[in-house]
Image (cartoon, rainbow, N blue to C red; front, side):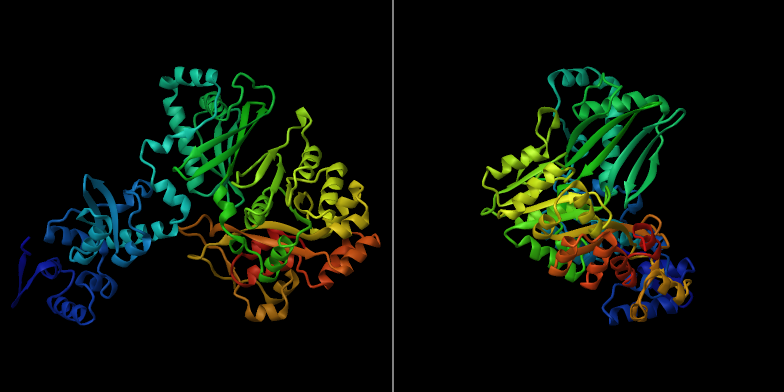
Length: 576
């Protein structure tokens, strides 16, 4: 490739700079000065033009394409999940500002914004063992693509990226022979339905949704995702597809497709790679206009995030870890549905899951499979309830027992007996606070002395939406007096960095992801004495505050003061 030369007044300026002069984008003197300055600071000419002279990156890409004979590719139209498997990590992409786009045989086609970036091509060739060919891309668009890849380079995205086009729709379904035969028989007619349902499941995983709702109404049919705790409509398929969508989901989850009058429960497993699978817990509900189907997404990787990623304050984490290391006692996690109780419990089990411990769980349903733990699905229809499972556990030499939920006195009594006889017991109770948990157990009929002697720690929790780190701005519209009324202390406000959501291309409405808000209360001697004295919820709550344990409101305000969540979220997930 011989660079073109352009005549400009009294001098000849060659190459890309000459094209810029000829197009009246820059004058000759600025081009010469830019080339000189770029060399002096060891920066490429194109990088200098974009960063220092604000030359439009799209125009520059087109001119560079004409100058060097390299085609331009619109990377904004590239599906990130269809990029080649990540032999090249995001750090290397960021270092060299280069992204592998696709491969043909032993040739890897790499998007770069600077055609002189030979070092990038050489290093990528060395890293992959493949020959590399350059494709030009608009620098701004390439920068965004690299950022998106780095932002999403968690284990789930890596597994998704290894899927081929065909494998994206490979679902492992445990179906009966009759259902498989019916599915194969209708495959020709239902292929669009199959692909549509699979795409919905994949999209929900990519977007980090926790639930998928398929909802039929009189004149419309809609699909919604619950993302960051909020339901959002994602698509409205034609209303006449409702029966076929319901049938497909029921086949996938091993339900009776002919039964439409009563609710059913099932399960779907989607393989993302040889090492990674996502489970969906499925429930159908007959409604006036058809079956509403809700899928709860159960991602085992959420239990491997580690306790540091859950949002516990340092002192709260220390209390939880100390309780987990005790050989006996009871740890209770409480909160409404969808508050993250399962993740907290399984994170604790993950810490305890060592070869020298015998761990058994009784669950309804078993939400997440964990290797090394004996998990039992309770089935009241055949007499296997929580209490019966616990009785059996105690005859199996357990070290740690997890009960999905304490719902009645019989289960509570056996769990407490286990905690008092040398076993560590973890469970959940549906209440709103630590103090209310004690009251709930008392109302079940559990003697106060058993609660005081058995329960080690109570954790109440909520999930709050995390502010987007890219667009959140300082909150200056709320007066100091109003903040103090919300619960902030004067000392907190002195150091506070309160922020509010804005919304950008990286998030939804200014929020991205969620963080836990916790009340962790250790049953101290003073609190145990209050329980024995018959204290009510208000008195127990006051004892917890006097002992120095933050309630949910105080914990939320601490996260708000650090700019992690908004004032709106404080009010949404907690009460005064």
